[in-house]
Length: 248
Image (cartoon, rainbow, N blue to C red; front, top):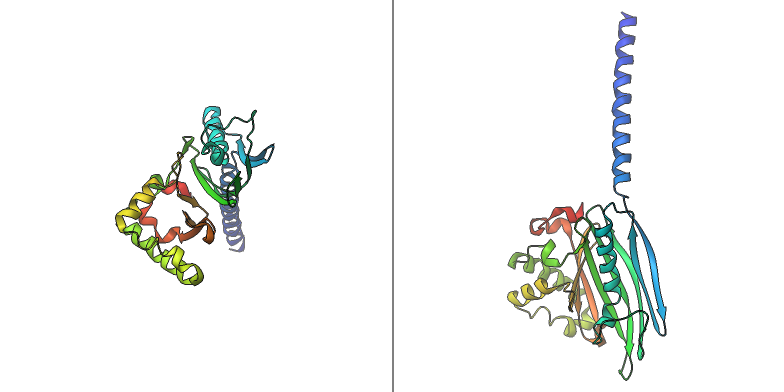
C-alpha cells in the first residue's frame, strides 16, 4: 500500500513539475515576443537646432520599419516643417532656436506611443514657446494612429472627457479662466477637435497612451504654459476603444 501511494505521489509531482515548466516557458516566450524590436536614440544638431528622436530596429518587415522610422523622425521635426518650407537637414535653418527631446510612453507588439517636448524661439518673437506633440504608431502597418483611429469619438466619450476636465480645473484654480474655455465648447466642438487630433498637417490637440491611461494634450495660452494635458484611465473608457490591440 505504501509503495502504491508513493507511486501516486511521484506521478502527481511529475505532472506538477510539467505544469510549472509549461507556465515558465510560456511566460518566457511571451516576454521574448514582446521584445522583437529595439529602440535607439538619434540626435540632429546644427546651428541652434538640437533634436532627438527614436529609431527602431529588428522588425521582420524592413519596409514597415522604414515607414515607422520616417514617421518618428518627421514628428520630431514638425516645428521646422511648420515654418513654411520642408526642413532639409543638410541646409539647417537660421533664425530659429529649437530643442526637442522625446519619451517613450508605451510600447507593445502592436502600438508605440511617443511624446516629444521642448521649446522653440523664432527670431523677432516676443518669447519662446513650449512644445508638446505626440505620435502613436501601428507597428503592424507602419501607419500613424490618430485619436479617432483608436477611440469611437462620440457624445459619450465627450461626456467622460468633460468630467476629467472639470476635475483638472478644480485642481488648478489659478488658471481656471484660461482652462475653462475648453469646458465652454459644445459637444460638437469637442467631437470636431478630437476627430482632427494628431493631424500630421498641424494640430492643437494630441493624444498618447501609457500602460494605464489615455492622455490628451490641448493647446492653450502662452501665459498658461502653451499646452496642458489630462489623462483618463483606459479601464474607464474600454467601451469606446475601437481596437483593443493598441493596449495589448
